[in-house]
Image (cartoon, rainbow, N blue to C red; front, side, top):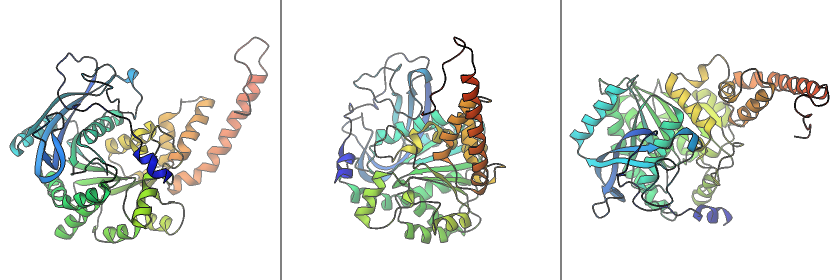
Amino acid sequence: MAALCLLVASCSRPEGVLIPFEGQIAGTDVVDLLVATTRVPDTEDEGFLFSGDRGEMAYAEISVSIPPAGARKSGEIQWPDQLPPNPATDFVTVAAARVDEAAANRFFDRELARSRDRHVLVFIHGYNNRFESAVYRLAQIVNDSGAPVVPVLFTWPSRGKLLAYTYDRESANYSRDALERLLTNLARNPKVDTVSILSHSMGNWVTLEALRQMAIRNGRILPKIHDVILAAPDVDVDVFRTQLAQLGEPRPNFTLFVSRRDKALAVSRRVWGGTRLGAIDPTSEPYKDELRDAGFAVVDLSEEQTSDRLGHNTFAESPEAVQLIGRQLETGQDLNTYDVGFGEKIGELATATGANLGAATGLIVTAPLAVIDPRTRNSYDERVEHLGQSIGDTLQSATELPAGDGPPPIDERR
């Protein structure tokens, strides 16, 4: 019951955030999104664009302004407290319009022509997501990751209500054919070089079902689909095994983000009675061997702390996790093929080069985000030993300083 109460708790937001801002916007980053959706257009309130009802595939073009880096923390969505929003502190909709398929294709071609690598990122949101929440989340991920991608949001008909879990689940099933068609069209577009997929929570179900159907239809997942990132998947482990068995060979690079402190997945397990893929311990059997044999890279976020009390959005709210996603999308390299464990790569992103205390910070950051691969694990003891020596040297240097020179001694209890 406590977990359910936590799920209910939410901050009120002003409605109509997708109505385009009419004032001046300067000094911000703008993310342009193509939206493909199986939601019904909301013709009664233009501030929503699409409802939670089920419909045919429809499209929209949306541009979101994001406050400058100094005005926000990476990983956060700054929802306005009131309308009109303040571009200096809030996420702001610059443009938003429903379009037909022909206009969507023209928009996509323009964005692709402007891109560096002709790399498309398709994001599929999870349960209990209103349309505007999915839009702002993808804009945040693209901005904070720094990935040079053309972002496409696939949004399915979620009611955006806590007690509509069953409706959302059926909506995910309803949308799997549409997602398969979208991914197939992107993968067969001669102007596209690479397609990556990032799915979250229940969005992993519709993603895996769409890929399963594609593999059955074509004998494998289409080769331009290079990376599939499964974040906090709300998918039964046993069902996942059957899906995985039908994905064909060769497969894309799969990365799995898990957390044993994900309260939303804990509630899902109580509802459905099966272990959720996003809540497994990847270091224990049988998961450790199964994931290794399947070639999955796994990122364990169990100890990572963010403002999300449920621990369900950590993949997007942790600055280090978002940077990891950006690094993978930018390089296009399988996490399991780096010369050193990718957990160390995360540490490098957050560590001040050559600073002993920076090394300590890097290890603390690396530990909860360590990718479960042999290179990271084999070198971990050595890094801990090196860290201990570095801290010892720092403490000794600090205590040997003459009185009045430099900083005070470091408290060893910290």
